[in-house]
Length: 120
Image 1 (tube, rainbow, N blue to C red):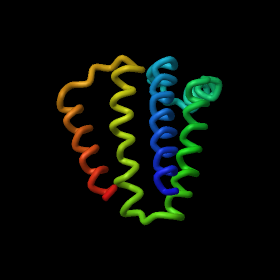
Image 2 (cartoon, rainbow, N blue to C red; image 1 turned 90 degrees about the horizontal axis):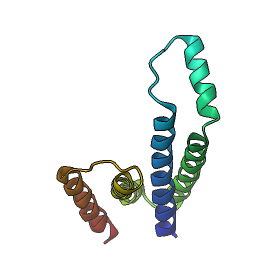
Image 3 (cartoon, rainbow, N blue to C red; image 1 turned 120 degrees about the vertical axis):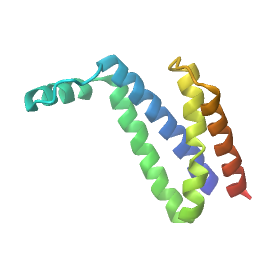
Image 4 (cartoon, rainbow, N blue to C red; image 1 turned 90 degrees about the vertical axis):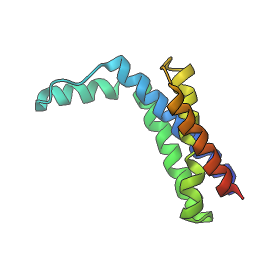
């Protein structure tokens, strides 16, 4: 049961992060921080389908995390869900077309090793 929650959290969090990045790239950088400009930016983001989907995905991850914490210790949940970093790195490379250097791949590999240790 707990690994099912971990899978849901990892998938939903990674999807949410990638959708959020795509939505913000479509929106562009927020440069004006006056109250009226912030309101317009928030209204535009509320209509951005990528941002809306990201919020939905992150909500799924949040509630799955609550479920995981009801059946597993925090000392298991946090390291096990760290595999999200690996999936996000892969998605950044292939879905968002980001350049990912060898140090980031090495870091993702270390995360995989840590999750493998927790799984024992």
